Length: 182
Figure 1 (cartoon, rainbow, N blue to C red):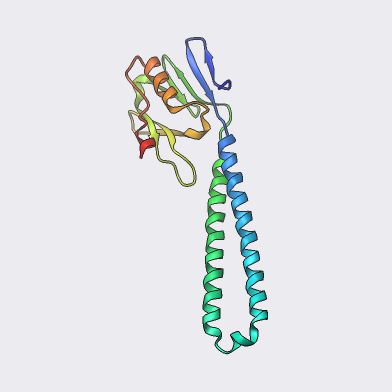
Figure 2: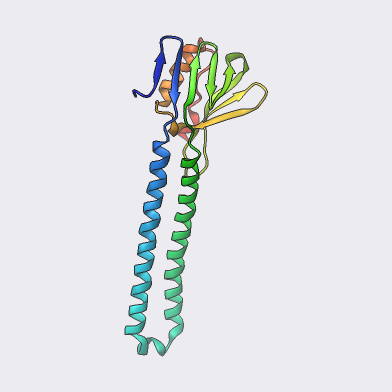
């Protein structure tokens, strides 16, 4: 992890890494494109079957239209779900930060550009993020305010963050990783 820098023994600096969020958005885009192609092929096949079996289907068209409707409804529903997932993944990728995401030092932490000294820190841990994003690293101040960064945008392992926080805080704090187990 050469992007993470240790500034002597004074601090650990972790930059943002937007790569995972952008890769997820790209994956959702590919899935949406594939599902649109599949829906288009399904429509063509249904039209071909209808034209080919038109006389036979004309005798009792209701079951045919029910089956066609269910097939098309399932395909359109799948496309809508993938479109929503893609839009949310794209929004998360576009909101990725730049610069320093996390700085841990003897005086405290700086998360998403907001400095929090050890005396002002109430809790540092992971919390569930919104779908389709992953968990967040969230700092809660003693006044109740919070600041968070997506954990996937930090190019360090959560256990490394925990041990670093424990070392720099003199054992007063650690990173609560219990949300990662749920």
